[in-house]
Length: 121
Ligand SMILES: [Zn+2]
Image 1: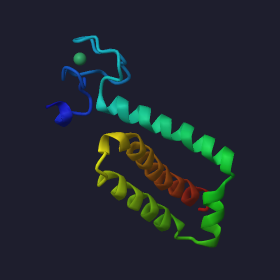
Image 2 (image 1 turned 60 degrees about the vertical axis):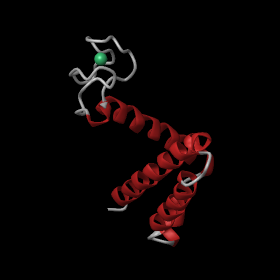
Image 3 (image 1 turned 135 degrees about the vertical axis):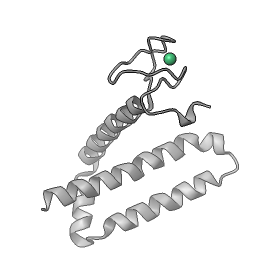
Image 4 (image 1 turned 45 degrees about the vertical axis):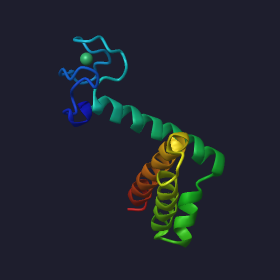
């Protein structure tokens, strides 16, 4: 029912939540209360994952991109294929965590491509 809420409404009760507020005044839900807030939290999370992976693996996406300028297409295709396999799996509930990890990777590759475009301008 609440999946079609406006971006700035509480995901628990549907009441309007002013930007940046972390607790709904109506139902006192203290989880991130609007889709906009959840989106912001996920973006923060993607940045933490990006920083950690780039530290662990070196700047491997940038290096690959030097060799293969369209590397992003291969990365997206790999993650898309993995996502398709996971989503078609029979034990989907067990796979939920992997599906979400794959979606994060996919989002981060798109952002990394934007970063590389910006630094190479
Ligand atoms: Zn609420």
